[in-house]
Length: 435
Ligand code: ATP
Ligand code: MG
Image (cartoon, rainbow, N blue to C red; front, side, top):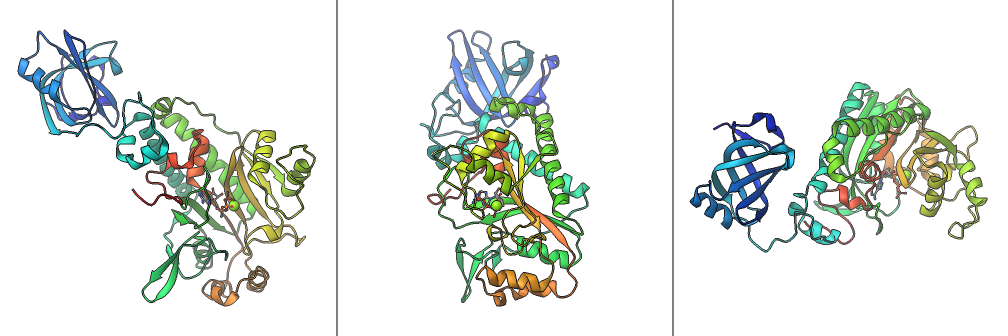
């Protein structure tokens, strides 16, 4: 007998060869004279065929008693069968139950019985056995690997910054406090300050993929309280340079998923289109001029300086219909580290937008310590609590720019999924901290 093979490693041209498969009992179909056991593994399905008259009766008895979702080993002979998944079936010679599954099952893995997202998340281990759910996580893996390779090839160094921090990155209250020995500390909402310090350390170009924690009381389909951020920071570049890097990354991710995840896309029943670069750039001022010219009751008059609501994002998305950048935001609507342009009211900043929502925010940063200190002050924050950060700006900080891209938002928009929780193994939101 050969070593264990995945279902996807076998094909009809191997007819007559022996094979050992290991996986889960997806379904048993007893049609009287013939019985089929569908074995499922990570790569797909295999049909185990029991022609009752020809099969050892003991083996048939074992097979009949196996409960759905039990873990089994099947040894048998490969045979071409055009009607079976992948065009082959296995005529079994031996079956071992490695671990039986209880019944009833918490979820149906065959997709015949639908379940609410909450129920699915409660039994995530079983939910992910469904090929269309597993497909999402295979694509997530592809997106992560492609991002890492892309940034490596562009000369970026991977860093790991602390997730336990003493101060808020951007002030505000959206932080989870933790007890840190006899002090208060927080879960990090962004690697922003640390990646900037690394510009002062001379690393030149850095990236990090890590969790960000936001205590905002959002209850939407695009917010999590623990999300994954793809962050970069680069020295001696301007914000246009990092926008080009970002749009190239997005196009590269779509291409690599389209070309490298064909089976997963087909399990999800979708096709994706690679967005064309360069993406459109519209200024914040153009965006609000357009929105204020609309006669949409959901969009009230926008005063220069206001943030753009979800309704505004949707309207712009409808208008543009593909990925785009909103650039040159009012200085006051962006964090203190964002660099103002010659007109101090307008900042050198951008948001990358998918027609459905924001995917990333970035900017040229302030590198002069006096300007930075006065911006921190102007935002009502205490510069003293940022001393660990400001120090790096006093001893040779190069000009720099960067962005933070939400991994889950990239995935949910790429795969046209309604809820961000679909792309996270164990989502954390206001109601859910377990499993
Ligand atoms: P939004 O306005 O959509 O809530 P934000 O502007 O507060 O997002 P940033 O601080 O700019 O978010 O973070 C950079 C990126 O990280 C966002 O563009 C988004 O893709 C992702 N992100 C931020 N917060 C969340 C969250 N709570 N859940 C999921 N992704 C998030
Ligand atoms: Mg943002």
